[in-house]
Length: 153
Image 1 (cartoon, rainbow, N blue to C red):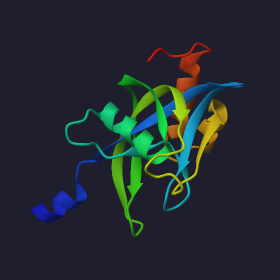
Image 2 (cartoon, rainbow, N blue to C red):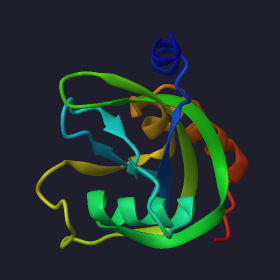
Image 3 (cartoon, rainbow, N blue to C red):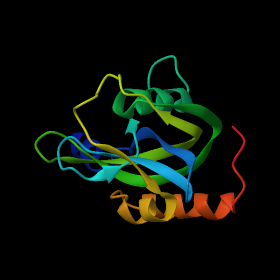
Image 4 (cartoon, rainbow, N blue to C red):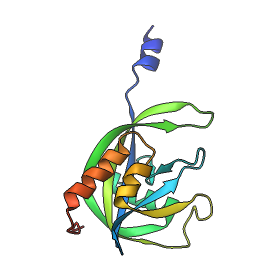
């Protein structure tokens, strides 16, 4: 019975992700990348890394998945429930710790270049396009917090 309890009441896994932000010609823009399996639009995210803070791991994921470089804000901006889809379609309940990167630049030579699509979206459109539970709300909250002034990272 203890085995079944462990399967049913397993604590949620933790992932870390980053909203990569820059000022564009029409206002703030947010980076979204397509998932490798289903093609959904999400922020760069991944698992925590030994010896790294969650913010550092999120920064590494942004580089690996999208070639994004910028100034990381070390404080967690938000934490939302999410599901990580594993190979075979199994969904693992997770919490996603979200950080913010400002002054984002996209470089062309990065580890996953050519594997997934990446795009900078106007912040309001990114909030509607983001295909992870509650992520759009977090992007909207960031947009409201910015109120026109660039965040200092």
